Length: 306
Ligand SMILES: [Zn+2]
Image (cartoon, rainbow, N blue to C red; front, top):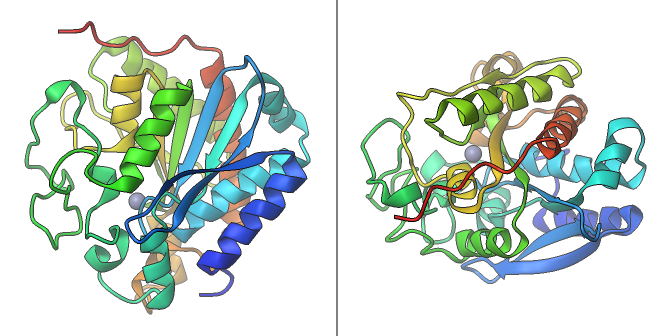
């Protein structure tokens, strides 16, 4: 699993970087198996707040590394990173799913997607958020399954899991202006699903801002006003329930993953680059420019109460 970190090393790294960046750390919740879910916060009284979350899916370690890479750069801010520090309060949650991370570590990254991606109760946490506006769950590829044992099992009810409740409560109390959720692998940017023209084109601009700062590989935006469906994802909940600009970032493009291994020796090496530094370097500037661009916008409008 080198050069990736054990669960303990990941938390130790969070502490080291938080100290260096002048951030405080907070436990925002606990996993099913009792592991703390921790955030670093660089306080900035009165400033709008931004949130970077990662690793809601167990094997997606590179996401946690990109989140930690953002914190590392915030410790020695220059250029746009310094601007972001000036203009926003920054929250970073490198690992939303510590049980999935630990399971992936203990099994050395071997296993099925369903076995490694979910929390300790087999729930895909990124299908466990409430569907906006009481939308009904529709069947579509990846839309979330109601069957325990499936890789996208959505759980018995929205926010049935302590990990999603921790994020939903944090977001409800802090009222973030913008957020990014880091995943792997695909090499794509997926904004919250919106159908109104203005928000849709704003997300196009936000994604353009993101890729304009990427140093070697630009990601494609995946969005449709028509064909997308609500699936209980974090972005959709944050945008529609909490008026927060929100995108999913899938680090590490398919082509790069296939170049690395045509047949990966384990699921882990399909999802994670052997050289995470190259992708941290590519994606952190994108995140920073995305946040800065979002800070120039008004919050997305909340739907009128029914
Ligand atoms: Zn994911």
